Image (tube, rainbow, N blue to C red; front, side, top):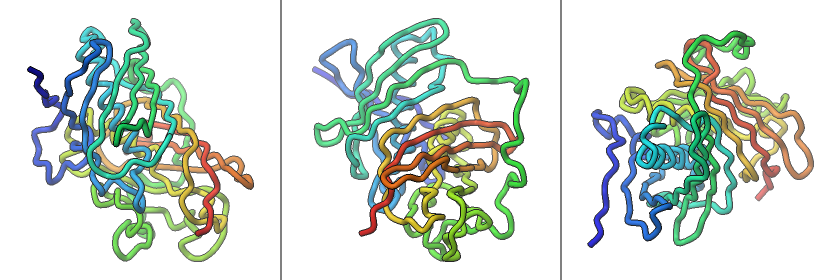
Length: 298
């Protein structure tokens, strides 16, 4: 007889104000292979961009599964966290129930390697290779002024993602968090063109911010939060991610996270986009780089 175990990875706060905690909540499933872990999770429709599940949220959910598996199978490495993630998107899952299949590649004193496949309908739709290590917990020996003139909280001319903003109608992630975009950089909102760069602010809801692990997974998700920067060049539509690499540097301080995104080259078929996540203290929390396809007009 087999049983399913609910993993205790939930904060004590009410789920009403902790929607990202539900992304990170897992149910352990029976496995025929002792070397493979299996978990069930749910990614609700609020974690979508249009009709598509948000890529960064799927990476964060996979990170929660990898973290739970490492803590369960190698408790002596329980203080490690995923510091790097390399994600390939093989398909576009629908909101709802997903499964995570987890495999250990290496257990070391400094580095551990865990692979996670996100499965829906019997198909692997997202595969992520995680590198685990120890997060930075001291002041950096050197840090550039990445935020520059971007304030720690949304400025007076920032545009909140709500029903009055076309971005709010499309980016449903704003239903599970607070999000605002910097209109100084997002010139496409005024029907203008500008450099392929964007800035925004995002903050988890109170219940999610209170759980240290959930808040850290949220910061990892935020590294994929910017709209495609070619929007500033007048190129709109879904920009499928070919490959996404995410780095997690440290746990975020409470408060707003600043996301700064830019591209080095927007080509005829694809573009690159770098995103940096800075917390309320000005520290770099997470970074990402992705290669994506140019949005195709429909």
